Length: 333
Image (cartoon, rainbow, N blue to C red; front, side, top):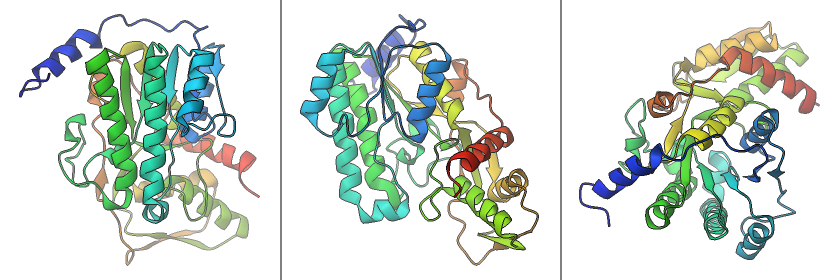
Protein backbone atom coordinates (compact mmCIF):
# COMPACT_ATOMS: atom_id res chain seq x y z
CA UNK A 1 0.00 0.00 0.00
CA UNK A 2 1.01 3.62 -0.43
CA UNK A 3 2.46 5.24 2.67
CA UNK A 4 1.15 8.58 3.92
CA UNK A 5 4.00 10.31 2.14
CA UNK A 6 3.37 8.44 -1.13
CA UNK A 7 6.70 6.66 -0.72
CA UNK A 8 5.75 3.46 -2.54
CA UNK A 9 4.39 5.42 -5.46
CA UNK A 10 7.64 7.38 -5.60
CA UNK A 11 9.70 4.18 -5.49
CA UNK A 12 7.65 2.61 -8.25
CA UNK A 13 8.01 5.75 -10.34
CA UNK A 14 11.77 5.64 -9.95
CA UNK A 15 11.93 1.90 -10.51
CA UNK A 16 9.89 1.80 -13.71
CA UNK A 17 10.37 5.17 -15.35
CA UNK A 18 13.75 4.63 -17.00
CA UNK A 19 14.05 0.85 -17.34
CA UNK A 20 13.44 -1.38 -20.33
CA UNK A 21 12.87 1.58 -22.66
CA UNK A 22 13.75 1.03 -26.29
CA UNK A 23 12.50 1.84 -29.80
CA UNK A 24 9.34 0.02 -30.82
CA UNK A 25 9.75 -2.63 -33.49
CA UNK A 26 8.29 -1.35 -36.76
CA UNK A 27 6.35 -4.59 -37.21
CA UNK A 28 4.69 -4.40 -33.78
CA UNK A 29 0.89 -4.46 -33.73
CA UNK A 30 -0.34 -1.02 -32.63
CA UNK A 31 -4.03 -0.39 -31.97
CA UNK A 32 -4.91 3.29 -32.41
CA UNK A 33 -8.35 3.74 -30.84
CA UNK A 34 -10.12 6.74 -32.35
CA UNK A 35 -8.04 6.86 -35.54
CA UNK A 36 -10.49 9.05 -37.47
CA UNK A 37 -10.44 12.01 -35.10
CA UNK A 38 -8.18 15.05 -34.94
CA UNK A 39 -5.71 13.31 -32.62
CA UNK A 40 -5.99 9.72 -33.82
CA UNK A 41 -5.57 10.59 -37.49
CA UNK A 42 -2.41 12.56 -36.71
CA UNK A 43 -1.00 9.63 -34.73
CA UNK A 44 -1.70 7.29 -37.66
CA UNK A 45 0.05 9.70 -40.06
CA UNK A 46 3.07 9.86 -37.76
CA UNK A 47 3.34 6.10 -37.28
CA UNK A 48 3.01 5.46 -41.01
CA UNK A 49 5.67 8.08 -41.79
CA UNK A 50 8.04 6.27 -39.40
CA UNK A 51 7.49 2.96 -41.16
CA UNK A 52 5.14 1.18 -38.75
CA UNK A 53 3.42 -1.38 -40.94
CA UNK A 54 1.04 -3.21 -38.63
CA UNK A 55 -1.52 -0.67 -37.41
CA UNK A 56 -4.85 -1.96 -36.11
CA UNK A 57 -7.60 0.50 -37.05
CA UNK A 58 -11.34 0.10 -36.51
CA UNK A 59 -14.19 2.51 -37.18
CA UNK A 60 -17.02 2.88 -34.66
CA UNK A 61 -19.28 0.74 -36.85
CA UNK A 62 -16.63 -2.00 -36.90
CA UNK A 63 -15.89 -1.88 -33.17
CA UNK A 64 -18.04 -0.11 -30.58
CA UNK A 65 -15.62 0.58 -27.72
CA UNK A 66 -18.49 1.04 -25.25
CA UNK A 67 -19.43 -2.66 -25.56
CA UNK A 68 -17.18 -4.68 -23.26
CA UNK A 69 -17.70 -8.04 -24.97
CA UNK A 70 -16.89 -6.58 -28.39
CA UNK A 71 -13.71 -4.94 -27.13
CA UNK A 72 -12.58 -8.11 -25.37
CA UNK A 73 -13.25 -10.21 -28.49
CA UNK A 74 -11.22 -7.77 -30.60
CA UNK A 75 -8.23 -7.95 -28.23
CA UNK A 76 -8.47 -11.73 -28.00
CA UNK A 77 -8.41 -12.06 -31.79
CA UNK A 78 -5.86 -9.37 -32.70
CA UNK A 79 -3.49 -9.42 -29.70
CA UNK A 80 -2.08 -5.87 -30.13
CA UNK A 81 1.38 -5.18 -28.71
CA UNK A 82 0.74 -1.48 -28.05
CA UNK A 83 -2.41 0.57 -27.54
CA UNK A 84 -2.88 4.31 -28.03
CA UNK A 85 -6.21 5.35 -26.54
CA UNK A 86 -7.28 8.50 -28.41
CA UNK A 87 -10.98 7.61 -28.66
CA UNK A 88 -13.40 9.77 -26.67
CA UNK A 89 -16.74 11.51 -26.82
CA UNK A 90 -15.87 15.19 -27.10
CA UNK A 91 -17.79 18.43 -27.55
CA UNK A 92 -18.04 22.09 -26.65
CA UNK A 93 -19.74 23.86 -23.76
CA UNK A 94 -23.25 23.46 -25.16
CA UNK A 95 -22.85 19.72 -25.71
CA UNK A 96 -21.34 19.19 -22.25
CA UNK A 97 -24.19 21.08 -20.60
CA UNK A 98 -26.86 19.29 -22.63
CA UNK A 99 -25.57 15.72 -22.43
CA UNK A 100 -23.64 15.38 -19.12
CA UNK A 101 -24.66 11.73 -18.64
CA UNK A 102 -23.41 10.83 -22.12
CA UNK A 103 -20.05 12.53 -21.57
CA UNK A 104 -19.26 10.80 -18.30
CA UNK A 105 -20.78 7.39 -19.15
CA UNK A 106 -19.46 6.90 -22.68
CA UNK A 107 -15.93 8.03 -21.83
CA UNK A 108 -15.81 5.85 -18.71
CA UNK A 109 -17.02 2.87 -20.74
CA UNK A 110 -14.43 3.37 -23.50
CA UNK A 111 -11.56 3.77 -21.04
CA UNK A 112 -12.54 0.89 -18.79
CA UNK A 113 -13.07 -1.54 -21.66
CA UNK A 114 -9.85 -0.69 -23.49
CA UNK A 115 -7.61 -0.57 -20.41
CA UNK A 116 -8.92 -3.81 -18.88
CA UNK A 117 -8.72 -5.70 -22.18
CA UNK A 118 -5.22 -4.34 -22.80
CA UNK A 119 -4.03 -5.71 -19.49
CA UNK A 120 -5.85 -9.05 -19.68
CA UNK A 121 -4.62 -9.77 -23.23
CA UNK A 122 -0.96 -8.99 -22.64
CA UNK A 123 -0.48 -5.56 -24.23
CA UNK A 124 3.11 -4.42 -23.67
CA UNK A 125 2.27 -0.76 -23.20
CA UNK A 126 -0.76 1.53 -23.26
CA UNK A 127 -0.85 5.30 -23.68
CA UNK A 128 -4.02 7.05 -22.50
CA UNK A 129 -4.68 10.56 -23.80
CA UNK A 130 -6.66 13.10 -21.82
CA UNK A 131 -7.04 16.86 -21.88
CA UNK A 132 -5.92 19.98 -20.03
CA UNK A 133 -9.51 20.33 -18.77
CA UNK A 134 -8.63 17.80 -16.03
CA UNK A 135 -7.10 20.63 -14.02
CA UNK A 136 -8.93 22.89 -11.54
CA UNK A 137 -10.57 26.02 -12.89
CA UNK A 138 -8.21 28.20 -10.83
CA UNK A 139 -5.05 26.12 -11.18
CA UNK A 140 -1.70 27.93 -10.90
CA UNK A 141 -0.17 29.15 -14.16
CA UNK A 142 1.65 27.49 -15.83
CA UNK A 143 -0.27 24.39 -14.74
CA UNK A 144 1.99 21.62 -13.36
CA UNK A 145 1.00 17.96 -13.26
CA UNK A 146 0.79 18.27 -9.47
CA UNK A 147 -2.23 20.58 -9.78
CA UNK A 148 -4.49 17.60 -10.48
CA UNK A 149 -7.30 17.24 -7.89
CA UNK A 150 -6.29 20.38 -5.96
CA UNK A 151 -9.49 22.36 -6.58
CA UNK A 152 -12.91 22.52 -8.25
CA UNK A 153 -13.16 21.89 -12.00
CA UNK A 154 -14.57 24.20 -14.64
CA UNK A 155 -18.33 23.45 -14.34
CA UNK A 156 -19.01 23.54 -18.09
CA UNK A 157 -16.90 20.44 -18.79
CA UNK A 158 -16.63 18.66 -15.45
CA UNK A 159 -18.37 15.49 -16.70
CA UNK A 160 -15.77 14.97 -19.42
CA UNK A 161 -12.96 16.02 -17.09
CA UNK A 162 -13.98 13.59 -14.34
CA UNK A 163 -14.01 10.73 -16.84
CA UNK A 164 -10.50 11.66 -18.01
CA UNK A 165 -9.25 11.93 -14.42
CA UNK A 166 -10.65 8.45 -13.81
CA UNK A 167 -8.68 7.24 -16.85
CA UNK A 168 -5.43 8.62 -15.41
CA UNK A 169 -6.13 7.00 -12.06
CA UNK A 170 -7.06 3.70 -13.70
CA UNK A 171 -3.71 3.62 -15.52
CA UNK A 172 -1.95 4.35 -12.24
CA UNK A 173 -3.94 1.68 -10.40
CA UNK A 174 -3.08 -1.00 -12.98
CA UNK A 175 0.58 0.00 -12.79
CA UNK A 176 0.61 -0.16 -8.98
CA UNK A 177 -1.33 -3.42 -8.62
CA UNK A 178 -0.23 -5.36 -11.71
CA UNK A 179 2.93 -3.54 -12.89
CA UNK A 180 1.09 -2.92 -16.18
CA UNK A 181 2.93 -0.37 -18.31
CA UNK A 182 0.11 2.18 -18.72
CA UNK A 183 1.01 5.85 -19.09
CA UNK A 184 -1.05 9.02 -19.59
CA UNK A 185 -0.46 12.17 -21.64
CA UNK A 186 -2.44 15.40 -21.24
CA UNK A 187 -2.35 17.65 -24.35
CA UNK A 188 -3.00 21.39 -24.37
CA UNK A 189 -5.29 23.08 -26.94
CA UNK A 190 -4.81 21.28 -30.26
CA UNK A 191 -5.38 22.29 -33.86
CA UNK A 192 -4.61 20.99 -37.33
CA UNK A 193 -6.00 18.80 -40.12
CA UNK A 194 -9.30 17.04 -39.30
CA UNK A 195 -10.20 19.72 -36.73
CA UNK A 196 -13.84 20.65 -36.11
CA UNK A 197 -14.69 23.76 -38.14
CA UNK A 198 -18.40 23.80 -37.24
CA UNK A 199 -19.67 27.42 -37.19
CA UNK A 200 -21.19 27.02 -33.70
CA UNK A 201 -19.41 24.15 -31.94
CA UNK A 202 -15.74 24.61 -32.84
CA UNK A 203 -12.93 25.93 -30.64
CA UNK A 204 -11.43 29.39 -30.98
CA UNK A 205 -8.71 28.73 -33.59
CA UNK A 206 -10.76 26.80 -36.19
CA UNK A 207 -13.69 29.15 -35.53
CA UNK A 208 -11.53 32.18 -36.35
CA UNK A 209 -10.11 30.50 -39.43
CA UNK A 210 -13.57 29.73 -40.80
CA UNK A 211 -14.92 33.19 -39.95
CA UNK A 212 -12.09 35.02 -41.72
CA UNK A 213 -12.32 32.70 -44.73
CA UNK A 214 -16.07 33.23 -45.13
CA UNK A 215 -15.63 37.00 -44.70
CA UNK A 216 -12.94 36.93 -47.41
CA UNK A 217 -15.21 35.01 -49.80
CA UNK A 218 -18.07 37.49 -49.20
CA UNK A 219 -15.69 40.46 -49.48
CA UNK A 220 -16.85 41.73 -46.08
CA UNK A 221 -15.40 44.99 -44.86
CA UNK A 222 -14.96 43.83 -41.27
CA UNK A 223 -14.95 40.86 -38.93
CA UNK A 224 -16.14 41.23 -35.33
CA UNK A 225 -14.49 39.07 -32.67
CA UNK A 226 -15.79 38.71 -29.10
CA UNK A 227 -13.88 40.13 -26.14
CA UNK A 228 -10.84 42.35 -25.76
CA UNK A 229 -8.33 39.99 -27.35
CA UNK A 230 -6.19 40.08 -24.20
CA UNK A 231 -6.56 36.51 -22.87
CA UNK A 232 -3.53 34.27 -23.39
CA UNK A 233 -3.81 30.76 -24.79
CA UNK A 234 -1.44 27.92 -25.65
CA UNK A 235 -1.74 25.94 -28.89
CA UNK A 236 -0.03 22.78 -30.08
CA UNK A 237 -0.16 21.45 -33.60
CA UNK A 238 -1.70 17.98 -33.63
CA UNK A 239 1.23 16.61 -35.65
CA UNK A 240 3.56 17.75 -32.86
CA UNK A 241 1.30 15.91 -30.42
CA UNK A 242 1.58 12.76 -32.52
CA UNK A 243 5.37 13.10 -32.40
CA UNK A 244 5.18 13.44 -28.60
CA UNK A 245 2.99 10.33 -28.36
CA UNK A 246 5.58 8.18 -30.14
CA UNK A 247 8.33 9.78 -28.03
CA UNK A 248 6.52 8.93 -24.78
CA UNK A 249 5.88 5.35 -25.88
CA UNK A 250 9.60 4.88 -26.43
CA UNK A 251 11.04 7.08 -23.68
CA UNK A 252 8.70 7.20 -20.66
CA UNK A 253 7.29 4.63 -18.29
CA UNK A 254 6.17 6.30 -15.09
CA UNK A 255 3.31 6.61 -12.64
CA UNK A 256 2.64 10.30 -13.18
CA UNK A 257 0.72 11.68 -16.15
CA UNK A 258 2.68 13.98 -18.47
CA UNK A 259 1.64 17.38 -19.80
CA UNK A 260 2.08 17.83 -23.56
CA UNK A 261 2.20 21.48 -24.64
CA UNK A 262 4.08 23.96 -26.77
CA UNK A 263 5.12 26.07 -23.78
CA UNK A 264 4.30 29.20 -25.79
CA UNK A 265 1.46 31.64 -25.21
CA UNK A 266 -0.27 33.89 -27.69
CA UNK A 267 -2.95 36.48 -27.03
CA UNK A 268 -6.29 36.01 -28.76
CA UNK A 269 -5.61 39.35 -30.49
CA UNK A 270 -2.27 38.09 -31.83
CA UNK A 271 -3.92 34.84 -32.88
CA UNK A 272 -6.73 36.64 -34.73
CA UNK A 273 -4.26 38.91 -36.54
CA UNK A 274 -2.19 35.89 -37.58
CA UNK A 275 -5.24 33.95 -38.82
CA UNK A 276 -6.39 37.05 -40.74
CA UNK A 277 -2.98 37.27 -42.42
CA UNK A 278 -2.79 33.55 -43.27
CA UNK A 279 -6.31 33.53 -44.74
CA UNK A 280 -5.68 36.75 -46.66
CA UNK A 281 -8.64 38.75 -45.34
CA UNK A 282 -8.09 42.43 -46.18
CA UNK A 283 -10.89 43.98 -44.15
CA UNK A 284 -10.95 45.43 -40.65
CA UNK A 285 -10.79 43.46 -37.40
CA UNK A 286 -13.18 44.78 -34.73
CA UNK A 287 -13.13 43.72 -31.05
CA UNK A 288 -16.45 43.62 -29.21
CA UNK A 289 -15.27 44.27 -25.64
CA UNK A 290 -18.84 44.05 -24.33
CA UNK A 291 -18.57 40.27 -24.74
CA UNK A 292 -16.80 38.07 -22.14
CA UNK A 293 -13.10 37.22 -22.37
CA UNK A 294 -13.14 33.94 -20.47
CA UNK A 295 -10.15 32.75 -18.47
CA UNK A 296 -7.32 35.34 -18.62
CA UNK A 297 -4.59 32.73 -19.03
CA UNK A 298 -4.32 28.97 -19.61
CA UNK A 299 -0.82 27.56 -20.00
CA UNK A 300 0.45 24.10 -19.10
CA UNK A 301 3.83 23.42 -17.56
CA UNK A 302 5.41 20.88 -19.93
CA UNK A 303 8.86 20.95 -18.34
CA UNK A 304 8.71 17.25 -17.41
CA UNK A 305 8.31 16.24 -21.06
CA UNK A 306 10.99 18.71 -22.15
CA UNK A 307 13.38 17.31 -19.52
CA UNK A 308 12.97 13.90 -21.14
CA UNK A 309 14.23 15.39 -24.41
CA UNK A 310 11.12 16.30 -26.44
CA UNK A 311 10.46 19.69 -28.04
CA UNK A 312 7.70 20.82 -30.44
CA UNK A 313 8.84 21.52 -33.99
CA UNK A 314 5.93 23.27 -35.78
CA UNK A 315 5.54 27.04 -35.37
CA UNK A 316 2.04 28.46 -34.97
CA UNK A 317 2.27 30.27 -38.30
CA UNK A 318 3.43 27.21 -40.23
CA UNK A 319 0.77 25.11 -38.55
CA UNK A 320 -1.93 27.63 -39.46
CA UNK A 321 -0.82 27.66 -43.09
CA UNK A 322 -1.07 23.86 -43.29
CA UNK A 323 -4.41 23.83 -41.44
CA UNK A 324 -5.91 26.44 -43.77
CA UNK A 325 -4.73 24.46 -46.79
CA UNK A 326 -6.45 21.35 -45.39
CA UNK A 327 -9.60 23.37 -44.69
CA UNK A 328 -9.71 24.64 -48.29
CA UNK A 329 -9.29 21.12 -49.66
CA UNK A 330 -11.66 19.30 -47.29
CA UNK A 331 -14.19 21.59 -45.59
CA UNK A 332 -15.14 24.69 -47.53
CA UNK A 333 -18.25 24.34 -49.64
